[in-house]
Each structure stands twice: as structure tokens, then as C-alpha cells.
Image 1 (cartoon, helix red, strand yellow):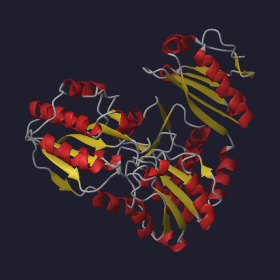
Image 2: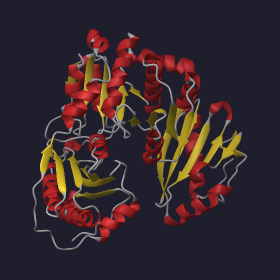
Image 3: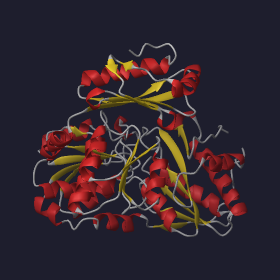
Image 4: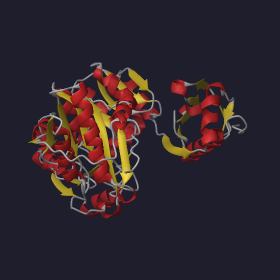
Length: 469
């Protein structure tokens, strides 16, 4: 038996380094036993992605849980995470959801995510309790599961977000890249129903995802960028493996950053749909989003790192949308979780109404909001370095960094954020538990941005001795 340790709401393992099938059944057995003791006569909903093991294991996990007299509903087709969590949230009898996905990891990974009755990610306390019920023996009992159609109502709702007339009239050629993930066939079907001429990539049954990491970011969207150019497409849309994050590509094959994509969506929701409310984003969000919120008169709520914080803000009911700054967008009309397909449909309507190339719309953003070069990276640290950074960071107030005068110092959510001339800034955000730190910086030029990231890395490695001047 492998050691099963959840990290937050998720457990993930390389297929060739563990026993994912057997371990998944042990997790199901623990969840079934725990549910019978705490929530008898309840329901658990199970969804899964397109990985080779997911569909079969989803059914068998459901049968194990059902053997404890728990009603189990299993999706009859692969689905994105947001569909599973929303199905749980809207089912008054559901006490938990199980999503079989390894997110944007490559095909040789298998994973499970647990959500609570309200659709939110299970807490560490929840998964610790599940771990305490795991036993070495494989479960032998099986029960009956119900297969349910989660996708048809969802796809119909997504399609109804726009009337489709502008898209149909524009008849754009759209390259759709679901990246072998949970939106394979689904996204293409919606885009086509709205009047787009769709070219779908990475939609076959390649067990190894052809070496692709299903992450909606460069370099993994290179194929989509090239396909846009080769086919003279209007734009491209890539959706990550879990169906949570989107990458937008203009007609010239250029990747539109998540921050500019979010700014476009904000403009659409306010000026084309007449919506209002708070904009929600994490502390490392670009100045582009901050300036767009100010321009549109939207209050901006800045949260700590992690979508769970943004989801809580959406649940309050007064937010326009939430963007995680790496391609994930939560839209209240669809639910509380990140929904790449929903965001894509709204952006398609925005582009069609704009009646000009996507590259021109992005250029107008630069003219209106100012051009900035953004960068972020995750820095690996030694265990001692990480602990030192967490302890020392609240007391660090440097007068300069990378040769620039510091105009403002703040320590939001146990991080360090330095405001600099010309709208530049840099952020150092240590992980609260692991030996890593998130670095982010933005500046008018790439050289200045890169210098800031280098200086931030030096500070993270040696917060008490590094020369940040």
C-alpha cells in the first residue's frame, strides 16, 4: 500500500510510481465509511477527466462508496471541475464531490480532488479525517451507482449566456484547443452552436497526451498559436486540462496575457452587458487589471494567493467576476468556480461585437491603460531558507531594490510588496508551508521587470543579507 497524503483538497501521484487504482479504492472506502457515520442517507457526486484511468476508476470508486448505503451519482461523460462542484452545490442531499483529475499535470499523473457540500475545496481538516479512515486492505463490497448527465444542462446554460447573433454574423474561424482535457468535444460543440467555424486540436485518445502538459500557457499552447496562423483563424482559445483556465490567442498567433484577457472581459461585462460589482483578484494581479477596474468604476478586492479566497468573495453575491491572474475566471452567472468555457463564450461575443481584430482590441488596451511587462515565477528554496524568509519578511523594508527607489512598502497576507517608480512593483510571497516562494514583478520594460525578479530571488534566498539596492 502506498502512503496516501492529501495536499489540501487534492491527492496526486505519478502512475508509474504508485498504485493509483488501488489507492483510489482505499480513498473511496474511507469516504464511504466516514459518510455513513456522519451523513447517513446522503449523496456523493463523482466526476472525472479524460485521463486513461479516470472513467473506470470513477465508476468503481462510486460502487465502493455506494456499498455503505450512500447514494452515488457518477457523471456519464468526462466533465470539467466546475461542473462537478456546481452539481454538488445545487444538490441539497450532496455532502461531498469527488473529481478525478490531475489538473494541468501531464498524462502520466492521476489525481483526486474532494469538494465539500457547498462545492468549495475540502479543507485540510476534512482530508485529514479521510486519511484517518484509510486502511491497507482493499474493499471487497460494491453497491449500485446512478449515472447522471451533468454536461447537457451545463452546456445549454453556457450557450445561453449570449444570444449568439453577433458571433453567427461574424462567423469567426476559431482554433479550439482543449489540450486533451475535460472540455474535449464539449467546447467545440458550444462554439459551433454559436456560429463559429471551429478547428479542434488535441481531441483524440492519445494516452500520453502526445507529451503535452495540459496547461493553458506557453509553451504548451504553441500548437494552438501555430494553427491560428496556418489557418488564417480569427483567434484561438486553449482550455486547460481541468477546464478551469483559458488562454486567448490573437489572429497574429500572439498569446494574450491572462491580465489583458481579464481586462477585456471586464470591459465587456460593464459596457456591453451593463453589469457592475466588485472585481476580485489576487495580490499578484497586474496593474492592467487594477487600472481597468479604476477606469470602469469597479471596486477592486485583492485577496491572498489561492482561488479559495476569491471563491469566498464571489459567494457574497456582489462581485462582477473573479480572476486568478493565470487564466482562471469565476463568473457568478455560471457558479462560484473557475469556468474557462463560460469565459470563452463571453469573450467570443465581445470580439464579435467589437467588429475588429482581437490584436486591435488588445492594442487599444495598451493605449488606454498603459503598456506594462509582467512576470511571475515560483522559486524553490531550501527548508531553512523558506523558514527564514517567512520569519524575516514582515520586518523587511528596503529603501531600494534593483537600483530603483522604493516608494511604498506593504506586507499583505504575510508577503512583501514594493511599489516603485513608473507604476512598477515587485512581490515576494513565501508559501505558508512548502519550500517555495512566488515572485511577481511588473515594469514598463522587460529589462526592468527581469532585474526586479532577479533581485526578488536574491532577497528570498537571503532575506537578512542580500543586497537589494
